[in-house]
Figure (spheres, rainbow, N blue to C red):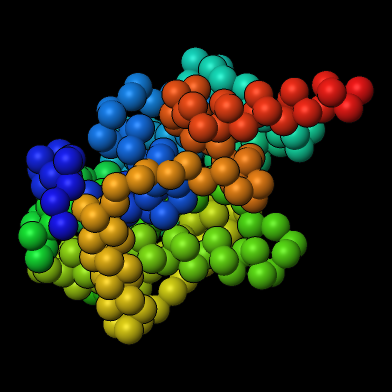
Length: 273
């Protein structure tokens, strides 16, 4: 099927994030990757980038362990310039406290590991798909020789086990893509996956499941096929997506379908009053 955006899509370097953004909202993908609208940061992205930056400095020995809490406090306001959503209440303080508590209580012994790479972008072409992966961290256990894919997440696991599992399953798709393409592109065989849930102060370990890795690749390929065959680029206006649209989507201000929906809802509310 011929797509009027074939030239853009054929030359696009896809990532987990871009493929997942299409699954979330085709119109958001269009605005971001085809129209190339300026992306707007949000509180969550700023916080995540800041934590990643500090951990990268620590693993690269640019900061010592004892320096992390002070560095976090001293540079917080210059890195976190945006306010969080108005609900749940107290989010700004909660995030700040969780971050400080994390850096004050890190117990991970990085001396047991050899640093292989940190935040290194790897480009590759697989089955005519140009792609890029950027793992947070790859470590080698000095004692066992195991290769470890290590990722940091600043979203917080809650008490709802079902929602937690859904969130973790989504993350694992991303990590399995890294596992496969690290092996194919760099001949790095990952033996296990560690996920550091920063705000929970918890590291979860996952064995590499080849079947789930294959499923991740199949999802990635099928999603890219859908993107290349897409013609309508509809906005996801489902109510379940509303919080994402308003407070997380980087192209919210450019999304006319969402702005129209908000205006319509406001007009209907005014009419009732």
